[in-house]
Length: 187
Length: 187
DNA sequence: TGTACATCAGTGAACGCGCGTTCACTGATGTAC
DNA sequence: TGTACATCAGTGAACGCGCGTTCACTGATGTAC
Image 1: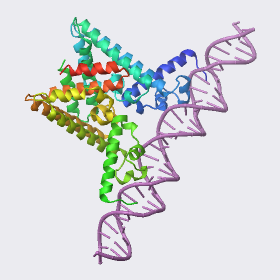
Image 2: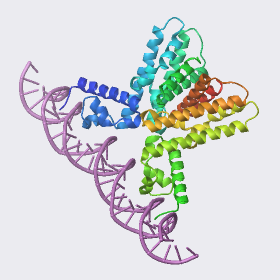
Image 3: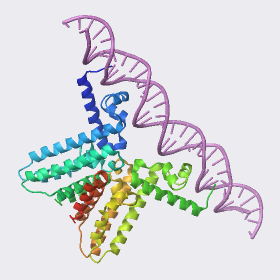
Image 4: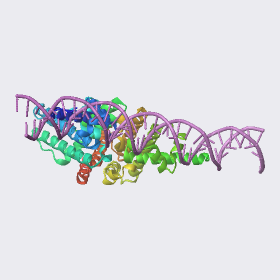
């Protein structure tokens, strides 16, 4: 039956949140429309009242995750000890906790091998996510009173994403921890 | 109809090669048994004469790609100018050509976000692939007459994989090139 | 403020498609004598 | 070396399943008067 506009907006938000977690936990092909709807407490049929198709949901879900992720990073940087903002967010990124909780973690790390096979919209959202992360890194450095060039921010981001994705891909926990540690010690 | 043992072995090899390229080009979920068989010039039915199931094929395909990749790296290191083995393979890894030809490139970069959602066998193969790459990096350094610690090899590998996967994920070619360049300049 | 009606969020079943897997069959290969 | 038979690599159709999407329907919400 029909719901109020506020209810409908809330439903939409719940679906995006559910999809954003499923997307990061299982990857693009691991999210089904029915799953996302069920996780949000709905039946599959209503999906198309809110989104054009599955791609539109995934694109918006990625974007939402990317925003959340950068906001969380900024908060961590603000809460960090004086002059340690960048170091704090880098260390937080490179934890086994982050490795083990992809659903609430960095969407770049979660979707990096999905994007090449995805459509235009998703890849555009991914690119925006990269830029947001680079800006977040630069911002943290500025907060520490030092200048980090764009190339250095890029190299840092690449090593962060590489370390976490490799740590998730291996079945050897000790190796995973060493990979994270090795990159943490690099910066 | 029945084929000779030599023919059958050749068929099996063709299927693994086809699957290994499809796997790297399209990711785990992008490979269908029928596609792999068709690419190898066969109909789908014969597949189960050679492999227990799709997982067994993908595991073997990953392993094969991983071996090929390391062998290619070793050859490049051997052909490199004196004292430049490591630099040569790192630079070769970080090219737009490698980014654009995933089918014949590093399987770690191609499958890194697939592995976490894959079964035990695939993750074990992935771990073996990481170790092989780390050994390959160390070996190249030794050839240059310098010692590279395990942590440094790990940090290098993470940044390589991160750079290429991010470069493939974005739809912005200039950004992709800058990411590769930024990591190349780090080492 | 009340009333009548149009709208539309959400339901749950159905459809079509692709995919992994199975299966009966074919006929060349390999083996036993 | 030759022959008869068992084996089995490969074929191509079929099955079952999950998934994205559609659709007729329901009944509360929003709107027009």
